[in-house]
Image (cartoon, rainbow, N blue to C red):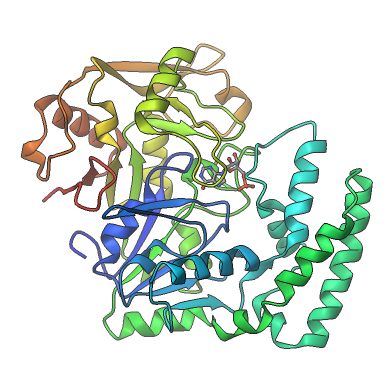
Amino acid sequence: MSGTGRCTVVVGCQWGDEGKGKIVDVLAEGADIVARYQGGANAGHTVHVGEDEFILHQIPSGILHQGKRCLLGNGVVLDVEQFFREYDGLAARQIALTGRVGVSRRAHVLLPYHRFLDKASESSSAQKIGTTGRGIGPAYEDKVGRRGIRVVDFADGAHLAERVEAAMERVCARLDHLGHGAGDELHRQMDVALALRERLLALATDTGPEISRALKAGKQVLLEGAQGTALDLDQGTYPFVTSSNTTAAGAATGTGIGPTAIDSVVGVVKAYTTRVGEGPLPTGFDAEMDEHVRRLGGEFGATTGRPRRCGWFDSVLSRFAAQVNGLTGVAVTKLDVLDTLAELQVATAYRMPDGSVVTDFPADTRSLGKVEPVYETLPGWQAPTGGARRLEDLPAGARRYLDRLEELTDAPVRWVSVGSKRSQIIEVV
Ligand code: IMP
């Protein structure tokens, strides 16, 4: 894996959907282990292999490279039904899986009632987050509330039954309170999920020791983030965030290795910005441009199909992401989407509601919704970039745009993706 160390984190630097799946797929070629460290089936990592498209929600994108071991760390909330649907779907497409997938014994299990609760609380809450409806918030609430069920709890049937019964009692009362009775459907889905017990246990491992042993033996490890920096529970646009630590530090806690084991962090940014779900998008386009770029970039959610809001590149956010993740390199994706635009804008600062100009990403999400970005205008290149394989193949305007992104982000651009195919990537040497 040139350009990275032995243990590398790949992290999203915007609001998710930066194209991490593609970058992980490319870097996975040189890795021995690829591990997810947070999130769950809310993620949708799209990877193109030849003419085939794969959308992975929980299994790391490394699974598409023969022989790589793929792990789900303790920091993920593992939707057991969805996980085996994905697993079986890959097997049906002739991906060899035996011995290649492991799930942490310490990972919390996301059960159907979490999805029911997610939907019920979104529809009855005054402040909508625009979640993916995959049960992520309720599963992490159970974890933090110390009432969750972990993979290791599946080992003892009687103990599991007790935990599930207590959870169902709590959940049904809560659903009633929210005016959304559980009904037979929840019980039916619970039966399906719990019937997967033996299959789940067969994949159980301890991800921390497994990864540490691999590193000691000189192997290469890739830690795959989901969502993005601005959706991080602590660093993002709270409360319009997901319920986990998406940022690079979460890769250590979410797999069970020490932070000193990580030696490089690759931040993925799209050449423009998108956001799905509620919450501010400071550099959002006007309606016409929004529609135009959404069409050019095919900006619809891989998990929910929702249209993504689109906007100019925001270097206030990318600089924040470089700082908070300790980026050692940046991968810029979807540069080709901008090929036809005559002019490009890049936000370099925000004018706050009180008239002050800031270059640090503000903690106050309500103010962020009212800022006016300070833009710098750059000329477009109006030439196709999809065939470029070296930096020198890019039009001068595209190179200038990348140079400016690098300067403003304050981290070196190491990869540029110019299309969805595996081959459409430039490694900056
Ligand atoms: P949740 O993670 O489903 O609870 O959703 C919380 C917020 O994160 C919502 O704004 C979602 O749209 C957003 N979100 C969650 N997963 C992704 C993702 O993979 N890509 C982009 N946005 C996401």
